[in-house]
Length: 250
Ligand code: 1GP
Picture 1 (tube, rainbow, N blue to C red):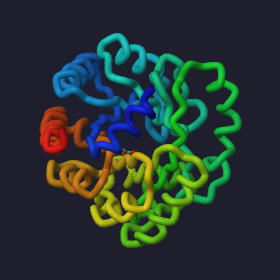
Picture 2: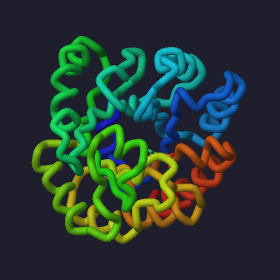
Picture 3: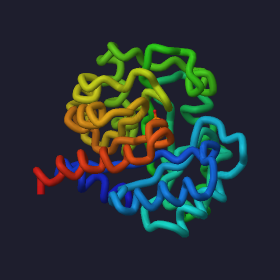
Picture 4: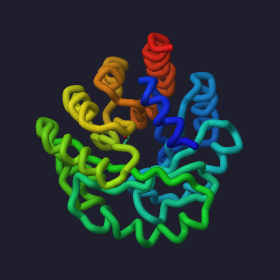
């Protein structure tokens, strides 16, 4: 079970790495093949698949391709209840707790629940928290919600604590795909101290330094999307950071 393994790793302070594959941003099969080859070589922990908007309707194709090619757990990162594929291993059952849009707090979940119940997907109840100073991003627009500003640590802390108290099993601090400003290290460490569940951090992590900062501040999993689309070798650089951190602990 993915959740059990994450909780165990968290208890040992072992770090994980995930790439985010947006089916709309795969230029061709060769690209995906190479991405998966490098991921396998780097012992990628997870592959998240999804995006706010999926306009090309290639989610199923993408998940099947990945499942055939590698043994890495595939976790759906859905933008809506339409983004479900039963051949994945798990789904981030995201509740957008930084926002006040009832559809994304509970509405879409009600529609998805009976479908998910019949599937074999592992459900990962996740408190999803958008961080950023720009209310004009794709995710802010689609979600019709404001992100928590990068300097409002208290709001991020209280939101994460409330998520955990509501029974969510993971917290995801996301600056949004391609964010200019990543989630600040200080905010990650403040949230980390306030919760006892695994912490996922993503959005705008496009340098090794930013990855190191996020891990050192307390991220249990970091997610790489845009930077990998620009330079696939970035995966190996960050995997080395993860391995270095984990070797100190084992
Ligand atoms: C976005 O956290 C992910 O939801 C990844 O963001 O594309 O900026 O790496 P990037």
